[in-house]
Length: 318
Image 1 (cartoon, one colour):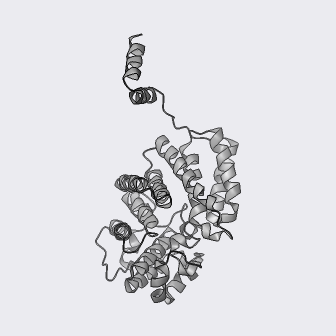
Image 2 (cartoon, rainbow, N blue to C red):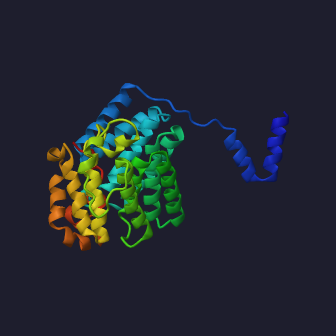
Image 3 (tube, rainbow, N blue to C red):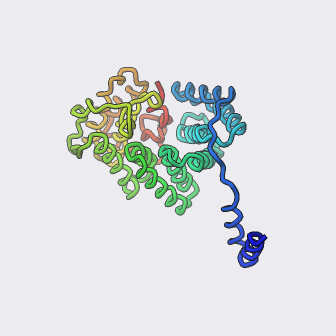
């Protein structure tokens, strides 16, 4: 009785206070993994679509994941994978014959589902990083500087949790910014920090030869993010492709060539679907300085990886 009276008094004092009390006294969603036939089918379909780089199957994959999520909206993995398919859809929009203005809805949905995943499993640093990415992109699209700032600090929190993973993902979305902007420069610096963490040293920025560090390859611990894995079978190659693009865009094409060549050190380079793209970049690196600085490139070879139509598949496609 006394508790209810206090609640009424608080509501009378301020509606905002009443709202806060009501929200805090309402149970939060609790995580619950789903193993139903529908969830298993949706997950299997997700990984198959991702590893095939099959952008055209995204509607079917999204439909299955959404159905599974509605069956159990407390599964953080289902929420995160929904976020990923929506961010994949907008990232590789260059594959569309005609890009509709509604493509921007994808980043809104991605932000929503990554937020759900973080609320259900705040310890997963990948979810934290993808939420920051989507918030940053969302703010940029809508010219909402406050949202961009929120996204930036969300990324900083994610980096603190898993720097080897989130320095890369955070810097990747910043590759789309103006090459003279402070955020672009910081995003490129984050790529160098990734290499420093992965090698356990300060890598030579004038001669970043990765051959001395290949023996460090691992599938365990935080440093597994530095190498290829079942989830991202060409993560190593994709990292150096993106970093080379960022250096080219900055105008440092000499170092970009050295970074691009590091991708060739991968044991799976010969099977990487995007090796020809990388080799064309090396051949045309001087010309690409100007192309990559343009806002509207008309082909994958003249656009940075983030805008090439291969922004997710470059790491995840078998």
